[in-house]
Amino acid sequence: MCPDVEFLAKPPFDGSLAKFIEHAADFCYKMPDHMRFDEGALLEPLSVGVHACKRGGVVAGSHVLITGAGPIGMVCLLAARASGASHIIVTDVMQHRLEVASQLGADLIVNATDPNIDSILKEHRITHSFECSGAEPAINLCIRATSPGGRVMSIGRSAKPSMNIQFFDAADKELEIFGSFRYKDTYPIALELVASGQINVKPLVTHHFPLSEINTAFETAEEGRDGAIKVCIQVHED
Image: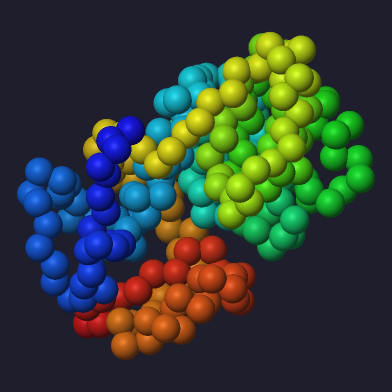
């Protein structure tokens, strides 16, 4: 919520793609020895999922819909399960991502292009919807699919300046619509969840590249090449 929030890895700060960087100790958290560095790298996106579950009030017995099976949708799946959700549904247009979501513990996967998706979701008493794609049809699907009195979390972002949202449908069902932007004080929680084994983020890392092949790493991540979900760069190649 800080109006002057700054990130070390983006402008106006340069130089984070290096073997060593200097960072304020107050913002660093020590990983236990048994954790791998790629697990540590995934604490940033996992914090997004942890924060969304806290904002949305996911508890034991929640029925969760997640639209978008990209990295953020996947970590929301993991965080929702760790928060006690008893039933989790994931939708996406890419079948290979849905299959990974199933491997991570989704109870039901549905291709978003399925013409019967509304009737399929209607059967599952969805209490919380997490929109992780930033797509207009997906946010409206969340509004239609969430049971009366439920909560819709807007997490994904779109390049479109505006969208046509079915606001009155949400109002008629007395849905609560929450915005969830990045995270707040969730790194220690995310670290504990991974370190204790409650959450396994390892399957999300599909590719590794050395620092010398950084251009290929970014292209693979951007294009989703070869089923890429999360691409890790090995800074220290030994």
